[in-house]
Length: 331
Ligand code: NAD
Ligand code: COI
Image 1 (tube, rainbow, N blue to C red):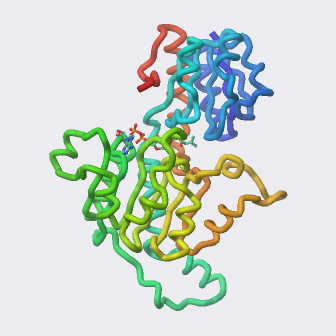
Image 2: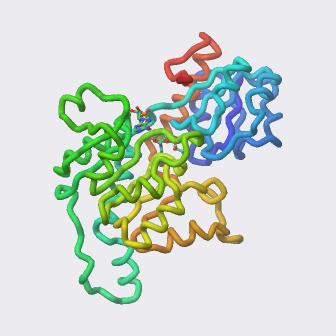
Image 3: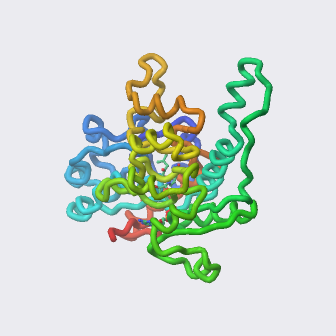
C-alpha cells in the first residue's frame, strides 16, 4: 500500500512522516495542490490525500481510476468542490475529515464578530495615526444580541455553546433539528424568520454551487437594519456584490468574512509582487466594518494534526476494508 499527498505544507510534514513511520506505509509528499498537470504523479498509488478549497481538475476521478487509484481522502470538511457522482461512477471511495476541530472554526467566528462589535479596525487605524479618542465608536456586548445560527451541525453547535457562555439569545435555522436543541426551543421555521429576528447571522452550513446564493440582495433586505453577518462556512453562500452594497449603504452593520465568493486565486497565496486584481475584494477589505481573513478559521495546531492523521487513517481503512468511518455519503 502507498499513498500520495498533495498540497502538503511545511507545518504538516512532521505529522505525515510520523504517521508513515508508525504505520510502515510509504507516502509521497507533493507541495502543490492537485492540478491537471501534476495528476499523473498519482500513477500506481492506492490513495490520494488532498486538501484544497478551489477547483479540482474536471476529469479527476476518471483519470485517477485509470491510474489505479482506489481512494481520495481529503484532509478537510467541505466536499462542495468534488464531483461525488463522478467518484461513484468511477468506483473511487471518498472520505473527508468531518470533525478535525469544530471548535477551531466556531471560536474564530466569534473572534471576528467581537472585532466588529468593538470597532477594532477603526481603533487600530486611529492609533496608527496617534489618535487615541473613543467617541463616537461605542461598542456592543454579545449578551445584548440575538444570534442567528444557520446550520446546527458540529460547528454550529460549538458556536452555540460559546454564545451561551456570553449570555446571548440564540435562534437557529436548519432543515434538520437536533433533538437537544429542539428541546431548548431555539429553532425557527424558515431562514426568512431567522434573518428578520437576528442581530447577528452566522453561517455554519455546507456550500453548494448549485443552489445559487443563500444570502442574496433579497435576503439581505429582510435582515434587521444594522445587523452583522459572519461567514466562516463557504464564500458561495453570500452574493459578495450584494453584501458590499449593503455594507456601504449602512443596511448592514458589518461583516466578518473568513470565506469569500472569489477567494480561490487570492487566499493562501503570496500576492506581494502582483497585488490583487479583484476590485470587489479590495473594496470589501477597505471597509471599516469588514473583518476579512484568508480562510484561516480551521488553522490551529489541534486541527492540522487531526486533519493529517484522520485522513491517513481513513485511506488505510478504505484500502484494507473497503470502507471507513469518515466515508462521504452522497445525499
Ligand atoms: P455539519 O455537516 O456538521 O453541519 C452542517 C449543518 O448544516 C447540518 O446540520 C445541516 O443539516 C445544515 N444545513 C444544510 N443545509 C442547510 C440549509 N440550507 N440551511 C441551514 N442549515 C443547513 O458541518 P460542520 O462541520 O458544522 O461544517 C459546516 C461548514 O463549515 C462546512 O461544510 C464547511 O463548508 C465549513 N468549514 C469552514 C472552515 C474554515 O476554515 N473556514 C473549516 C471547516 C468547515
Ligand atoms: C474545510 O475543512 O472545509 C475548510 O473550509 C478548511 C479549508 C482550509 C479547506
